[in-house]
Structures are given as structure tokens and as C-alpha cells.
Length: 165
Image 1: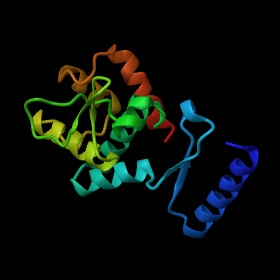
Image 2 (image 1 turned 180 degrees about the vertical axis):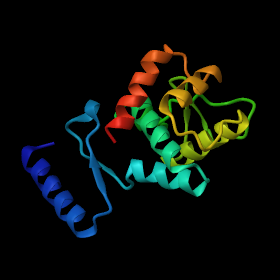
Image 3 (image 1 turned 90 degrees about the vertical axis):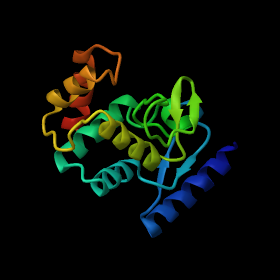
């Protein structure tokens, strides 16, 4: 892409975002020469979807922090390729919206559908929708075998995004 085209795209996107205030521009770190127009605000999509499904406000912020940690603040290849901010695998035994797998992780039509699928996960494993403590929630997820990483590392990552959101 030529320098002139890059400038033109940036000007058009700036104008569009100022006029509509409903579009985000994200540059995926692998494709710095391309501008990717994202028609949704990932954070708002996650918050709204969780709220619509009766998740407490406190837990919404914890799950959002978890999504940011799992996806490298929405920059990971798994997130971009699979619409999967939670790093979820495709389940075999519960209700799911997962379409299949890519790189060993679930593929979804959208971040909203991935979030609904995360709610299905919570329901299937009887995870309460009211938790208010990051540490308790992360340790509960570890007991339910949600993640393989060291629990202290995972907790520190989720806590970082929770405190900085």
C-alpha cells in the first residue's frame, strides 16, 4: 500500500469515526500495513451480552478483564482469526455456538456469540453469575479446569486488566 493511500484511508476513517462515533479502527500487529475496520467495540459487545444474560456488574468487569488477558487485549491471532476472546476450546458435551476449531481453539461467528458460548460454559459448570472477587473467580475457573496455566500467573493477568479497565 502506498503512503498516499495510507494517508487517505486514515483521513477517511478519522472523518467517519468523528461523524458516526460508532466504528473502531484496530491495527492487528501482524498486519501493520493494513487498516482493519472493526464494526463493533469489543468491550461494549462483551459487557452488553453479559448484562443481557443477568451477569452481575462486578462479574462483567472480571470476565472482561479475563477476555483481555486471554486475547492479549484483543490482539492475539486466535482472537482475530476465531472471534474468540476467551481462548475457549470447542466443547464436545455441552450446548455451544462453536463452529469448529482453528489452531486448537473454538471458532465463532462473532465476539457476541463467543460471549454467549462462555455463558453456556458457566451454566454447564454451575459457575455463579454473581462473583465479586477476581481471586475467587480465577481459582474457581482453575478448579473447573478452564485453563492450563499456573493459577498465580493467570490471576495476576486477569487482575492487571481488571484494575486497569
